[in-house]
Image 1 (tube, rainbow, N blue to C red):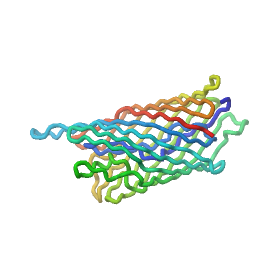
Image 2 (cartoon, rainbow, N blue to C red):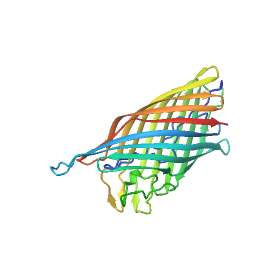
Image 3 (cartoon, rainbow, N blue to C red):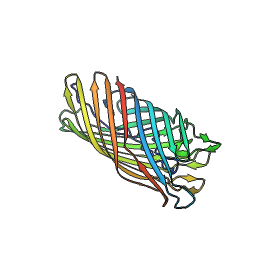
Image 4 (cartoon, helix red, strand yellow):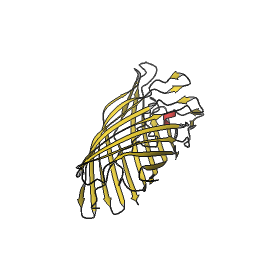
Length: 305
C-alpha cells in the first residue's frame, strides 16, 4: 500500500432512478464515484439508497392533498477489466428494491435491473512519469444499457409510473469523459457524462440525462491501511419524458448536491462510502406538485487484482 494510485471518476453504467408516484421525475444520476486502484482489475458489490418526497395539493375542496415517500435501494455487482493498458471494460448488474408509500398508492418491487457495459479508452496518462510533478490522466468512454429489468409492473391492473419500474424497457447509450490531476498526495478529478435514451415498447421515452462533478482528494498511508478522503460537488439535469409525442408533466429537472466520501484500502480490498446532500434542486413540477430529493448514500466493497 505504499504506492500512490491514480483515481478517476467516470459514468455510472447502471440507471440510477429518482422517482415518485405523484411526480414522475427521473433524473437518474449516472455516476461512478471514486474508483479503487486505477491500474488494477476489480470486482465488487455496491449498495446505494436514494429517497424522495412528493406533495400534491389539488387546490380543491373535494380532493385532499396527496403525499408519496419513495425509497430506491440497489445492490450492484460490478467490475473492471483491462483489455490492455489503454482499454478498460466495465460491467454492472443491478438488483433493485423499490418502495412507494403514498396516500393513494402503496407498492413495492424488487428484481433484476438494467445491465450495462461500458468501455473506456485512456487518452492521456503521465502518472508513471517520475520526472513530472503534476500527474495527468484523461479517458473517454461509451457504453450501452440493456433492457433487462422489468418495465411492466402493474398495481391493481394499471401500469405503475415508469419511474418506479425496475428497468426503462429501452436500449440506451452512454458517453463519458474523465480528467484527473494529481500533485503528490493531493488531486482533483473532473468528469461529465451524457445518457441518450430511446423509446421502449410502450412508446415511452425518458428524457436524455447529463451530469458533471468535481472532487478533491488526498491520499494518506497508515500502516497496512491507506485512506482517501474526498469531497466535491455534483450536478445533474434531465429533459422531460415523452409518452408518444406528448411531453409529460412533472418529469425531468436539475439538482446540485454536495458530496463527501472516504475510501479505505487494505491489502487487495477497498471499502468506500459516499454521502450526497442536495443544496439546490429544481424539478419540472407543475403548480400543484412539489418534489424534494432527500440525502443519498452508497457503500461499496471491492477486491482488486
